[in-house]
Length: 125
Image 1 (cartoon, rainbow, N blue to C red):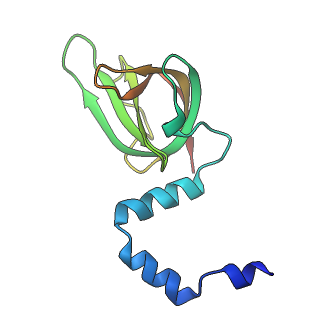
Image 2 (cartoon, rainbow, N blue to C red):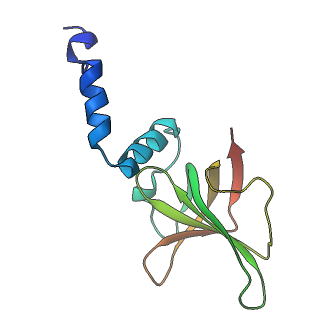
């Protein structure tokens, strides 16, 4: 049996894409473009080093308190992780929609969300 016999006809694929919510389509696209060499966000463990890859959903400057920070939310199609650069007001190239790879130790906040503080990062085309 060839792979062509198992493939969905073009019109069925088109109809399925119409019925699927846009968030699911976005997640599917991000998963497809993310390399398999990185840890999926849904498999992160607190206090362990990790390398994650995906797209930034948000990038925000926080100025409360003594020191500013740039905070971003990385989404890889399986979940999201916060990225926080402390003591920074701006990072050139970091904006919503940017593809990025980030490396660092995973922390778990009081709200249960995962965060990587001061990650080493690479912007991707």
